[in-house]
Image (cartoon, rainbow, N blue to C red; front, side, top):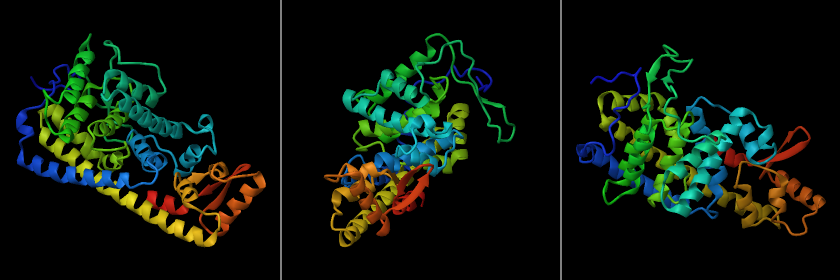
Length: 370
C-alpha cells in the first residue's frame, strides 16, 4: 500500500530492519571509521582533569544546537549568563530556558541510566518531561498530531508526516523499540547501527505531543553511554545535524516513504564520525589552552594553581563565588583583589550586567565558537 503522509503511519514496521542493511559493504566500511573516531574522542574526554568539565562547555553547545534544530534560538551571551547564574533561570528568556532544560534533561537522563543500567520507558518519559517542563506522558490515542513544514519553508504549513495513532499502538511500538535497544542477545547488531535504526524509529513513532526531536537526540547520546562507547553524554552531535538539516529530514522521509535505510544509516554514521572528530578537536584545544593558561597564571600570580585554573575553564562566564570557594579566608575584599588580579593578567575579562559584574574566559569562548 502506498504511503499517505496525510494518514497516520500505523503500518510503521517494527524493528529490526532487514538484515541486509547490516551486511552492506559501504555501511560496514563507514561503521569502522565512525567507531574509530568515536573511540578516539572518548579517549580525549577521559583526559579531562575534571570529568564534569564538559557540563558547561561541549554539553552546553550540544543543548544550544539541538534546540536550534527546532528553531529555538538564544544568544551565547544570554545563555552563558544563565548558566553562570548571573541571571536566574526564571528571569531568562524563553529560548534560553529551553536550552537549559535540554542540558538538565541530558544530565538527568545520564544519572538515571547510570543507576538503572538500562533504557526504559520511565527513563525516556522523564527526559521528555525535563525537556518540556511538563508532567505529561505518552500522547493519547485520539490526539490528531501532524508534522508540518515550517513557516520559513516552501509550501509552509503543508503536512509532511502523520505519526501512528490508535489505542495501545504507541505503547506497542515503544515496547518493540526498547526491546531492540536493550536485548543484545536477540538483536546483536553493532551499537552504532542500533542507534541509527532506533533514532529513526523514535522520530517516526513520535511518542509525545511535542519535544520528540530533542528527546530523541538525548536518547542517542545516552544509548552510547549505556553501551560503553561514550563515558559522558558530551558528543556534539546536534551541530552536524543542524549544519546538514535538510539532509537529516530528507533521509528520515525516504525511510518512511520508500524503506530506504542505507542512506539514512550512512548519514547518521557520518554524523557520528564528524562529530567525534569535532569533539576531539574541541577537547584538545581546551586542554592545550588550559595548560598554557596554568603556566602563564603561575608566572603572574603567586596564588594561581591547578584548582583555580580548572574552575576558570569550567564555564565560559563566571561569578566571583566560583573562585571564592577555592580560596581560604576569602573575604569580599580579598576576593575582589583576586578577581582584579585575574583581569589585570588578562586571564579573565569583566563584563557588567545591570548592577552585577561577571567574568569572561575569552579563550574558552573563542574555542567554543570556533
